[in-house]
Amino acid sequence: MTFGSADRARPGFTLVELLLALAVATLLAATLLMAMWSAQEEARDARTQAQIAKLNEYIMSQWETYSSRQVPIRYRPANPLVPFQPTARERLLARLVLLRDLMRMELPDRKTDVLSPKAQLVFRDNNGNVRGIAELSVESRAWREYRRRAVSSWTETFQGAECLYLIISTIRDENGSGLDYFRDNEIGDVDGDGMPEILDGWGNPISFLRWAPGYDSPMQIPDRNRSPDFFDPLHVDPRWSNPNEKVPFNLIPLIFSPGPDRLYGLITDTSAAPFLDYRNTTPLPVDPYAAVSPGIYVGQSDGTSDAADNITNHLIEIR
Ligand SMILES: [Ca+2]
Ligand SMILES: [Ca+2]
Image (cartoon, rainbow, N blue to C red; front, side, top):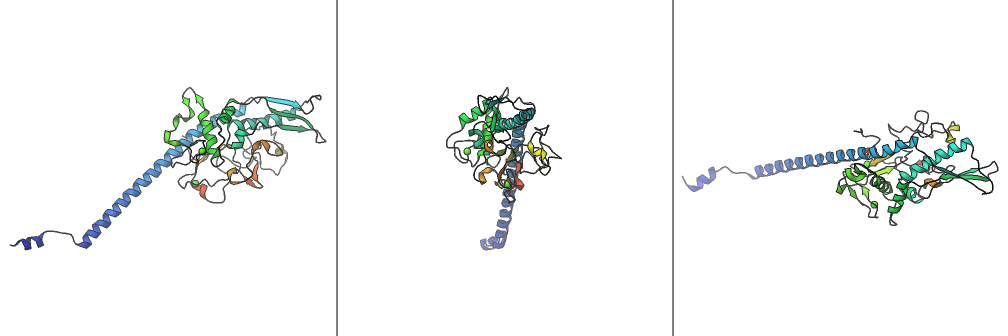
């Protein structure tokens, strides 16, 4: 036996076998990477759901307090020499409008909510002359704190998320701060405007709309007959006298992550100009159902299907 024949007998790989082995290895690696990626996506999704459930808990516990909230009102006459005596109906309207102003200031979702002063409800006589003005007689502590922390470089891009951060970071109770639940890497300033946001599992700001009348969900039905405004049990809102109106229906605050596609797909006032300032809506100030522009409402789809994969407090099962 020669060395040469021993060489020939040694098992070896042909080029085809090598290529085949390489292909199998590549496929295995790709499958493994895919499995790792989908496990990561699942973890991101689960974390975002948990974050939104926690944020929902904070916002809704505040929301529920408004049903029995004291609304401190100051009435001023237009002419200091002519006393202003509001009617019972006017007092009810003042309570409703200024309750909405309290919500606007304590649960802001845009720069103007933080920066615009208290709303004024103006009462006129039959000739259109101003008889008197109603406004909140105190400013809430939370609102003053938000104003103190609003920096001049603040931009509208992520204002909903930035307001949500302001609200949650101002919460203090016996268990600590509202931010304690969130990890360090879940707080960021994606747009670098000096105002932080809470970030979802994909690193995108979790946004907030206190009132999203354009959003349709199992929790928010845009029909006042099936789901009337919870905060107006006496039907004080003047639109109740118009049979053709669908407002005021019940609104539920909207907390939303853009989801895996990282696109929000909902109309907020950042996509329209001029920016909505709730203090100056007409005919009543602080109208939760105010249009961004004619026929366009806060929270409605921007015409794409980008919102389909969003993770929101209206759709997740609250644990
Ligand atoms: Ca920011
Ligand atoms: Ca999306």
